[in-house]
Length: 226
Image (cartoon, rainbow, N blue to C red; front, side, top):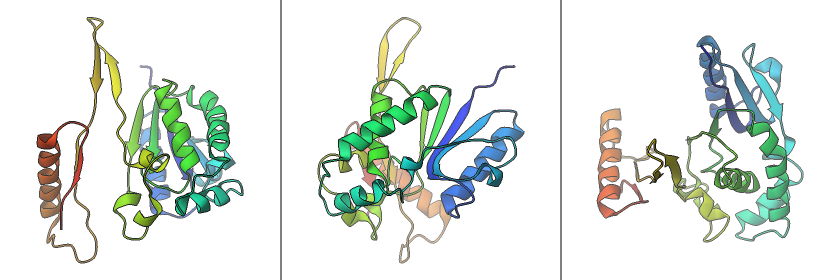
């Protein structure tokens, strides 16, 4: 039985220590145990720190601390669009395209919802729009615009709106008809001082937010008000 190839993409990978890196480690192990090939694509990382059998592709410009990314991020955090933003975005497109074309599935951790490397976010969006990524899962652990510590770093307009936007997905039916799929999202965030007394209350609040998103119209996201 032929198994599809999967890549996991993030700013960094083990031995870098972090919550997302731990999840990547666990994901890779599960895929390998199930008999699937898996490759991690990151700006930083070491193959020896990943489960045996995991591939690793390093693209340094994907990292958050790359010397070309740090000054761009500093300007973006202040609400300024750097003159070199498009050049770096296109550079990342050129480096990522041949790599991502090798994989059937791509799992992207946090890049679509965090501000740490916006040229990378923009590059992935361009590749999606160009049909150069076959199947993509956005695995979102955190959202910059909902975090009290980082929401001030998201500003109106491009490229910050990429972190808050939805992407339409077009599917071909057997009849030849093209069907566009969009998303409505409801979410509830647990933080210090939240009124939720149990996980079930948190899930119920997210369900209520999703119901509001669906009733208010397509392509909506609603956060449960605390």
